[in-house]
Length: 541
Image (tube, rainbow, N blue to C red; front, top):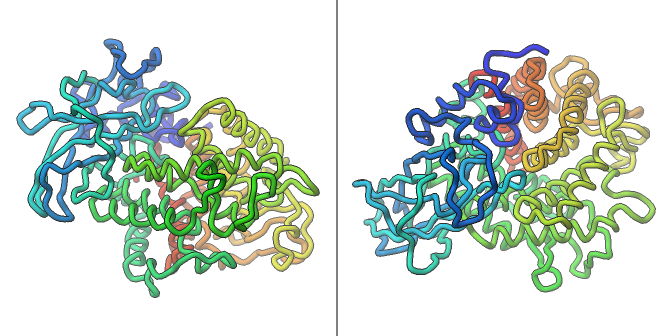
């Protein structure tokens, strides 16, 4: 195994970004320390190892041990939507595993160092060690329109001033509360990432996606729900997820507002509640659906939960949590039916398994009780058993769409497989399932050695099709959806060869980038930043 400088820190980048790498590998933490000090996230003399120190799980109200990490973060409140008079400001504050265990160890300081009255509650915990993944922080402030207030968020120190009564989240109030982008990306709240400012190697990607978001014609916001196809479907590939990743890499008020707008739009236009509000499905599912009926394939690929989880962890909006739980419960209760009957729907195409696994994994992230955990394990077990010796998740590729391939009994779809690897990496971040290392490595080998087009510039639209070999590289724009697989392989193994392949396919993908419709914008923006985040543990961004 060959490694680049610092790549011993790359083993768990998928799970929690640069911070958790040191903990997982026991490697040198110098790079992670520097990044966090730059973000204002570690006090002088502390280290990433300390920030991830493990120990007994503590319930809220307990006192952490003396080795618990301490740190400060700059917190900026910007009244971007008008004046505030004793109005509530709130934000979701994410943490990497092990950094914070008790909500009482989080406080807000004024400019003079005095403590402000705040309300703090846990939004979610990392299932593996029960440390806090994100906490809601809410407080009152008064600001003139356009004014800023600069505060300090301190963790690891007992809070002495709390509001007399709980404050509800105010994610769409007249002000936005922001942490440094470097803290968001290092927290692992939405996977491995690098900030916009750090991205030098693939700067052209950020330039193009920013340009096209504003210049799309017709505008992004003019698209709506399209049950018949995906090219006109506004949120396909999870636009809230794509836009939240854009926010956490840039962390300004405009990006926050845009991600919130998309999250609300999705909930208001694409969610149908079932059995009261016990379950939820995407609006394209027939109104008569019950969990005793198979979810439609077209609905499986539209029941997207990653963006709703981002929204909840970063804004604290309980409506986002409700959708994650509603979709997750529908998936869990439908699993026996999806697997039964004349065929196992999950194994018809990688995409069906991918979106189902995403839905259950995001549910588990918020509710890791045994019933949900068992459902997640069963999906992972089934996925592992499905992978063939080729490294592909082989299936009859005629079945999903005979018009694309009329003869292909044992093939695979590279772009759909990339969605499944993303789902497996989300699962690995929550469970640390060691079996997934080999699964991801073998999948990456298949992509590089077998699924690539003969010229090595792209990936076959379908692999194993006898009626069409799909040898053309005209679909190189899909590289940006796919190359995160190589980054994931590197993150889990530390093997440099995956970054060599990833950079090569990334460059070809950027030369063919097409992000002029929401579908294509979402597919690139949800996936390619993950690749940049994975590779940053071993190569300069």
